[in-house]
Image (cartoon, rainbow over all chains, first blue to last red; front, side, top):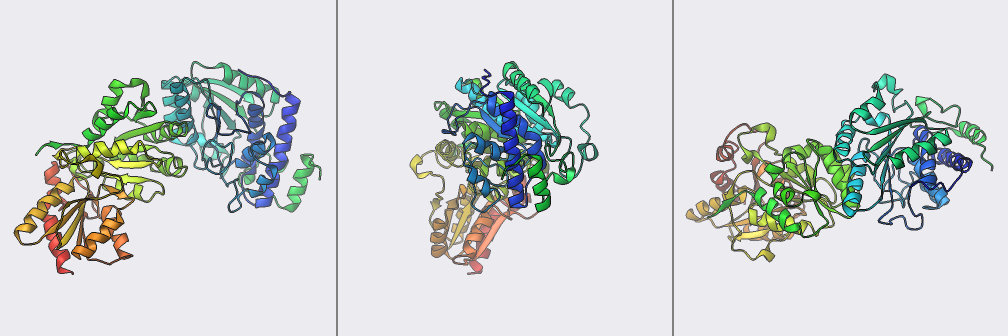
Length: 277
Length: 311
């Protein structure tokens, strides 16, 4: 099922360009969520460059794989990727958080081509993805539903309703990537709500589980192959990431969960990411 | 007169809708009660058990709707409320045509007591953009309205009742029962009683009692709470000059609230609201609850006289 259409270095370069756009978007809007966008972006870039069957020129293609960004506040990452892949134009990124813009604060299926789920309230995307996976099964289609969860997000009880139900229904076409960046809105997860053995929890719920380094593109590609090959039960790729990855002062810093860089910080970030004026 | 529970009309409608292979049914361990079990037996491949997990059920339904299916999800009215934010953010906001049915609504539900007696469901769902809100009065209209929902492009919430009530529409032309159109069951010029659900038959009894006193009442079955048939409200307000609403629901925000909101911006016709007065219920038989909560025919008739007095 995996067709590697890009080399690892090409995907890494794609992710770097997306990182630049993420920081630009949040800086322009002086609002938004850079930390979780920078932690997730290698994973999203890997998925869209390998396994995900979508058509940028036909975003509503009925038999496309679904990609559901459940942690919908990390929208700059998704918008950057959609622009790089041609679902939207690069100038559309300027509409992020702007009145009437297709790049709403949180990803919204009614506003932006290529967005399959209107997110923004945590704990909802897995259930929605389960519905998409069931629909595919009833249709007799090979399409899959990929859901990106945040680690703080799995503190929501409804996630575990969905985890139990998806395993009960043996939805092998439901695939989750967990962005395990260890930071949530107010502070480190360890301070807000310890989650103990996350892989054991998913295994106990009947899921196939694999852990990877979420910034090592070779491991990401292998992890996506694991998701593709696991079709007997729902599967989860637990990706260990660094919040704010790629921008030194944002890395592992709870302050940049939902805050924009000032002009000085922006210039530093652009330099670190190798942005060329 | 035949009696039946509206939830049976819902179950029958699902069976009849099954010929449309895009119709799917979702349950949260209460299919025997909401009556989706008939569909499950006939079409297990298109019935999805969500266990006792209402929040998940609503969004699984949303995912199915986004993939071209027509999902009908049901549980007790009270438990739908647990998934209110899912309905708000995951269904109403993207305007996905998920049809949520809450059975066992109102104090009429009876001896399970206050934890099971939803008296606020109509109010909360009415606040959501895009959502149609229904509360039919008999199994015939429930069946017909449920079938119409399958054609709707909008999400909906429908309340059905656990216990039997008189069947009013056995001999009625089905084309007269349409989403968004109130039904004038009786035409009088002194007062208009606008009722929904289990109180429609009580409103007819009240009209009989009023007639014996020389008061001629209009009775309307307002099965669609949203969008409210405001033209009909205006018409009977002009004709009667006094209005009573009657519902097995809080007087805050449901049918009475909707009619009050409309009248306050139009004719300011005197309005008396029969409903649950900002309190919880308790265990009791359905008829006992209607008495305790002052919802039965004599209470509706008294409210009609009060409304007339205020003209």
